[in-house]
Length: 397
Image (tube, helix red, strand yellow):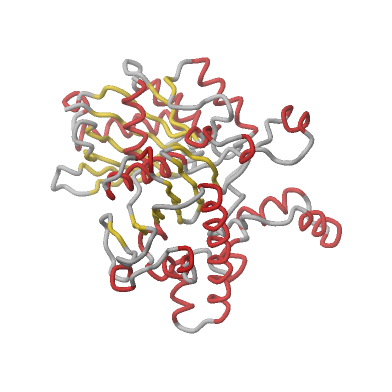
């Protein structure tokens, strides 16, 4: 057995998964949350054990204490890390800027560079660094690797990532489109090629990563050539609480007319918009249920959601110069037949046809949901960002 520990660290929590990289199976996983609060919470599941999920509530003052708690959970509930032959720790990092074009072994200099990129991801990169510091302290004898959400999109041409603002100003402040969800888009586009039995290098694919956060990616021959998110994860599709694309002048207008501050506008666009702003509910499952029950507000919000997706699909067909495959993935994309059908409804003229009989049944496996006559194959493929991080970690070491 050869194992890699994958870490996804936030400001007050971190998720982890131990993966047997030879068989690409999960050995264990868990969550440590409410770090730095009065009472923290930790859970650990050994997937090979019948004991089930182990949980406890106790003070967790910082990430270092949280990682020590995780190590203790492995020791007490298994699998034993010594027996798993841990060869590396892979860390998800949201923002790699233009510096990191692929997975990178972490040393002190790389750790500092990730810290310095916090201006571009103030909510994410500092939290990732906390996790990296704690993990390097707890696992000093194995390499640590940073896998960046942005690196998959470094293949985008300048025409796709450049904003039309003053070039000197943009360069000084590193303003460009970076894109996110890169690990998911990479994993799913490669899985799609394998599923349809065609070489990745010849496939033109659009990946629809639809979750609470959502993005679209145009993948040509395995390379990202365009994606909907921009400098931050705010740009692009309508999301659970994020607005996605909006005329920047709306912000000036709200500042002048409603007296809203920069902080209030930031909060509004990131936490109070999207489906939450349109319906009062940021959970797509609830919005979908309301629309099915005849709620006109919920249906109108879904129409906005669909309209935005269709606009990107049409745009990316043009950018790709054709299309072979559309893939739905992530929580909403994998689980909602209604959303999949609505997102592609009316695109039959582009050779995209959903088969209701294939689309409606719930399933957790990769599958085709398009008709036999559809020129474009429509797939549903569950994403596995942790496995992708483990794969990239192994590749770089």
